[in-house]
Amino acid sequence: MRLLFDKLPTDDNLRKTGCCIVSICCFSRRQAESSSHIFFDCAVTAILWSWLSKGTDIPLDLTSCNSLIINFMGRGNTLVQQLLNSAIIHTIWTIWIERNQKCFHNKHQSMETLFNCILVEVKLGYKLILAKGNSDMQDYKICRLFNIPFRTKRVTARHDVHWHPPPKDIVKFNCDGSSIGAHPCGAIGIVIRSSTPSW
Image (cartoon, rainbow, N blue to C red; front, side, top):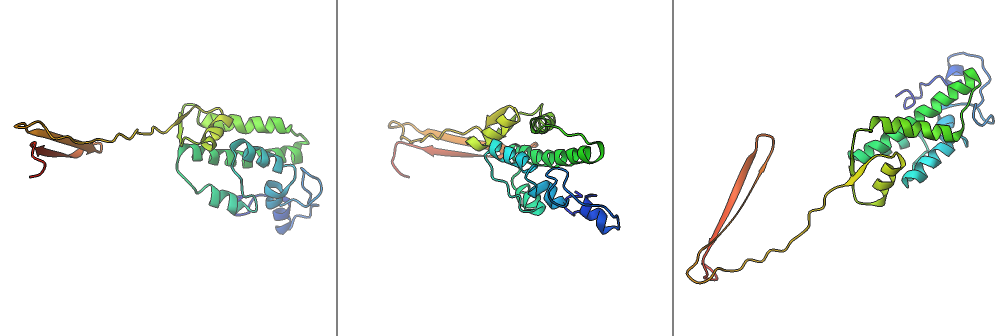
């Protein structure tokens, strides 16, 4: 990712290559444009990150690109986590596209439109998927924000089993087994007991 290595053609990077341009953020019109500023420090683009953070109930570390992308997105493999990672990527992409529209075509879209663009892009990537996550409000909020069907992981109920000896002159057989894998290997266990308390 060019943003991660600060290789985007922002004003500050163009000036480093010898381009004589006046650098200014096209969003706030108050500070020089750099990758760090337009994506993480600008008061205007911060509205998008605030919307994503509040909608998912997850605080985002926007101190740098590394802290957001590497530290945060590297966590977890669940589908809900991947959904949030996708939202972060699409937020970054939306900011960059909006920046180019403002700089080169003098066009801009409302924040509500940008929110909807992110929602649509994320949902398109997961429209045929039923998200499975933990039974907590955070996972539910993430899926609800992007209107993705959500199902919690099945929790196996615990049942206490108490063994009772058989009647006199009767032998009781208890057995259990399991298998695993596409070409299953398995095992079985058998316990044979009489009415005698111990053998």
